[in-house]
Image (tube, rainbow, N blue to C red; front, side):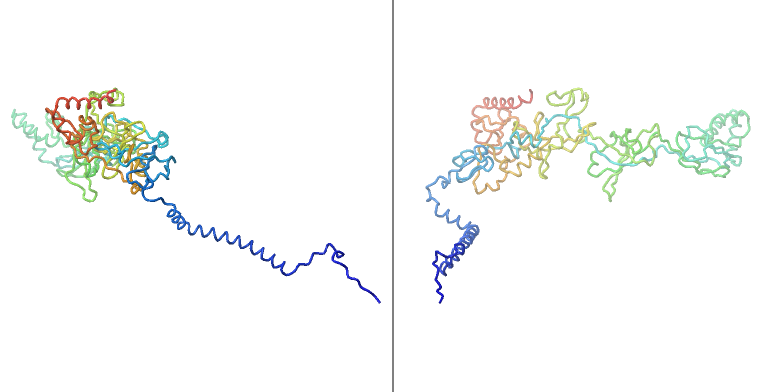
Length: 574
């Protein structure tokens, strides 16, 4: 009989894992599910916040918004601006300057009005020294320069028709000898061209017999008549003397060239029988030639006969031929809208050959364009940057600016004048036609109104300054201490300057006086300047409200106006 004894739990194998019940295993599964559900809940919460952020933010502002009238921002008479950038204006102090990130300062609306722009000034912009260097801004002085308008056209070299001669036979006969046998041969005046046998010409024989008979009988009148008839037949005096000496009628007649030139066409050959009037040669004098070119309709009013011109050719581009305009055709080419013009060029060395292409340059003086000019000897050194020796004593000078200083907007032309080292003003100017400076290749515009000698204008970088006023309109239209409402700060339109309703003479008077002699305000700040004439002296006032005070003491007003004009002219004379 065997007896089996059960071991206690403590006597079992310690390496064997303990056995767990059902509830313990269920708890372990729930813990795993809980951890994963927590991660999913966090993702759902983040997505909900992102998706409903605008709504959450609106609720937050609604719950935290202060009551009406409890904050300065709600006051319609208060605004907040950046002291470093006055054109940055907001309704609340919570925001910062988007440029320098400074805290905004508080002020009353309308307490700092923008500085008014004078008449003719379109915009004003202030740039930091770094922006000026970065944009490569360069300035040049408005000065008097010797300018001409150059019209460039292309033409062809032609024969001078007034120098052409056709040599014909004056008698019937046979060509015995041709001394000039090919086209293009050079002949001198009086050179023998051909010998003609005229034995079958009864008129010539009768005339020679009459001459001989008149000599023997002493009939002076008949002798002169015979000599004139022989001269009409191109019979030279040597041949006539030889006939009178020998008394025999010659059978050969020598034909000579009446001019010096080139044979451009040969008609006959040796042995040909010819009648009276038969052509023998065409001879052209190439000492002068014509250049015929076409000029656009817009330039026709600038041309007149006698104008000096210069021409160059492809074969000799370095040599310049001088000439003058001699003829304007009286009609236009309807297909090209151009007018044919003719120039006469001296050609002593025959370098200009008919058929060549030529580039013609016509220089039009300022006087022909209706521009007022100043003689070179009357221009002071402060008015021109060129050395005094550069301008010739009788040369006309024109007040001009470089071409790259002009911004053409289509409706008007704007030039940026340097008001101070870091401030530029857009000036609406009136300019003449584009002109050039002889020998320099630079182009300029004559100034008719808007600028005066001594002003400095931006040349390089003027487009970048203009772009600054267009991309950031507030920088161009609002100056120190200015501000705008938030409703218009998103796109501030350029504030227009004082309307230019004055005559050119009055505009010059405003620019020279600048300030009102009564209130001392800039002319144009109160609208269009008001003109009064006191004791025969014109005076510009800021508005018509100052007229009464100006007329109370006219002498004092005139004295103040003259002092203001003298003060504005003082810097230009230094």
